[in-house]
Length: 451
Figure 1 (spheres, rainbow, N blue to C red):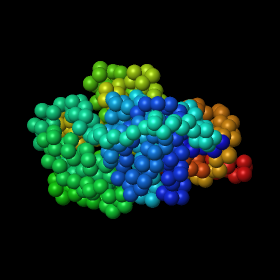
Figure 2 (figure 1 turned 90 degrees about the vertical axis):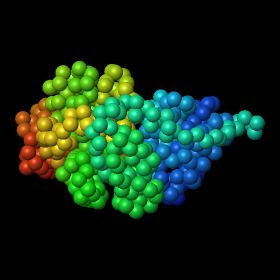
Figure 3 (figure 1 turned 180 degrees about the vertical axis):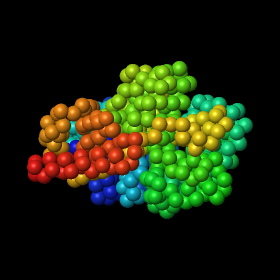
Figure 4 (figure 1 turned 120 degrees about the vertical axis):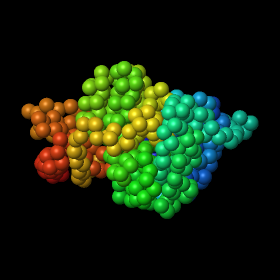
């Protein structure tokens, strides 16, 4: 059997790895696994979205499953709809990947991303081609519905509308030519904010910039924030499950800053509570959670893992350092429009600039590096590294996180590429870079020895 699902659905280049045959058979496999019921299916703004959506839908209907076409919408809006209305969901998206890519992400009936064992069962059906077709008079039907109204209503209910309206904030939102353009600007305007948009027209070629919300891709947003005197800038990725921010001075805020800021807010508001984040997150999250009477639980990297752990232990908040935040009182998935309104609400309540709020947080430097490692060597490599660093204190929740007096180093295999990643953290940039460089050399030697 091959492997179909990566760390976040099935992805590939359109009409090369990701074609209608794959989409059709995956639809058949999902429908065979489900047996009967309804599946909601929506897309991001990519050019191949309809081609793949109708292929998946046809496969589902051939097994007797009914389909609800949700059109183009943010991934979290589709997940919210699925939780409330259907037995399962499918999102046609490749998130932040370049425009030639597309993907198929499957959503469980509770709106969360699928568990690995369920993905494995669907994979087995897909590769065996043992699909359960129904007779002609029991094939599924397809109707259309709009997921946005109820989703927007739920997001707006979660914030202090009057406080935000009274603040009268000016905000620049970069929608990356993706489906965020259908949500975040409207939510913020409903909250009385003055909203200026960039790249808000839906365009699957991503003409404004690449859909990954990195600092180098967001130069126009940075410039616009300062030139119009905005209180903050907000950027989303292609399917709107991640949010990245600029403060009022045009400073790019790395995702760990927003994660720390929101973790502090949620613990303070809940008089404690549990926060969940991957081992790759900045220690600043742990610092603010513990300082405000909360508890932090670390997981392996991946938003589905974080979300499931949150559900299991009744956490109040969770998220990753890439801008993907999960608010337990709303839904158990990364939600960028929700993150946007929550950050805006915090600024309005505090009556202070975003830069001031960020300046109060603990500050750590994080260094990230990577090196090539064939997939077949990954397991053997981590075993060797455990032996090499056996004298050090370490955590093996995901790869190897080694603790030192001056910081920590995380060495872990990429879930999507033949790579190993080396993250290092310290209080200052020079030490973080030194730790990263030293450990990269050790990992490279271990790979060479195995090769």
